[in-house]
Length: 406
Ligand SMILES: Cc1ncc(C[n+]2csc(CCOP(=O)(O)OP(=O)(O)O)c2C)c(N)n1
Ligand SMILES: [Mg+2]
Image 1 (cartoon, protein in one colour):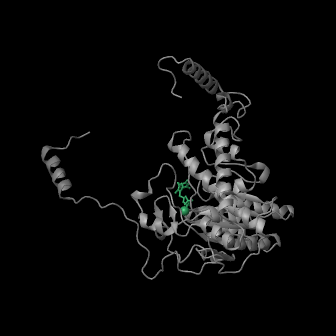
Image 2 (cartoon, protein in one colour):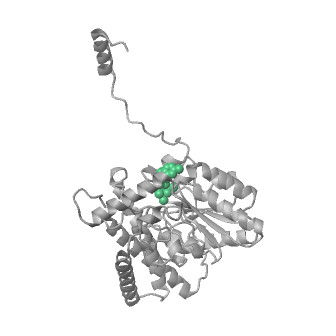
Image 3 (tube, protein in one colour):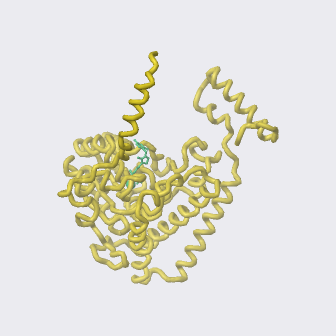
């Protein structure tokens, strides 16, 4: 290797000094002629933010309206507590759903019990609505022995086999292909199952969006593809995600019917999803739905959104709160009052507290389960590693110096 001469070094230093600091890469803004992606097109709305009926009433019976409200309140409390547990170090990670309760509950409530649901990142409410117990959800988050996945999955990967709720794939957009594939299977088998496949706005930039949309439309798969447009993909705002006027119109390029719905209006979401489910069940193929909503907290417990977005935007969306909207509507119909609200809040707080206490007292998975039902026969390396792990865990339990950190 030749060493640079003193003068060459000096020249290089001078060149470096003259060179202005490289600007931080900034995303190219959308073309001026393209209207902003959100707010540009009409939204299907049933309830105004004040809870007044402004659209076509889907005609749900009173007990079903109350059920939807109770589900929304329950998941809001669950969400709040799980984030607190994460902050206290009792859960490793959590992805909050505050603000998106109506989009998930309205769509999940439109599905039949035999249908299938392929969630994306924030659809715990759909699993709970389909019968996942709070204990099972918390066991998943805490990685307890009773967890269906034996604590092997990252938190927020709930699964509920009995209710056809498939664990989400963290790989953005892959749920779209999975949902379409399952819908194709139903079609080939000739049953009337419908599949609901969720995605975020960010997922519409993923390869699987194109593959899934195209496949679903060409083969008329009985699937409802539901985009939770919460307007952020971690720190990327929608205007930097897509120059399309709306997300919904992307479906027209695939020859798929679509609708754009107010995602904070549970009745509008329910009505749009119900129509799409009926269409799919009749054999008329897929529908794409864009639900306009807002992610009010960080992307996850590892994120700080104050570093990249204006809190004033959050305040605007707080005023469009989905839970309050339905509560106002129920009150106006004489289906809700302060007493019922207080009873519900107390009942849910007690149920969540009791579930946390029960699950936290449960044992962690036996470390042997890392391998024992994965491999029929352990490789020599795995055997050695497992022996090492056991020895270290034993040492740690004995409280000896230098023990394996638990
Ligand atoms: C293929 C892939 N690329 C990147 C990531 C990292 N990632 C995790 S969540 C996320 C943003 C998802 O945004 P969106 O689809 O809008 O869903 P949201 O988080 O808003 O619910 C990204 C880029 C990933 N998990 N998978
Ligand atoms: Mg998003």
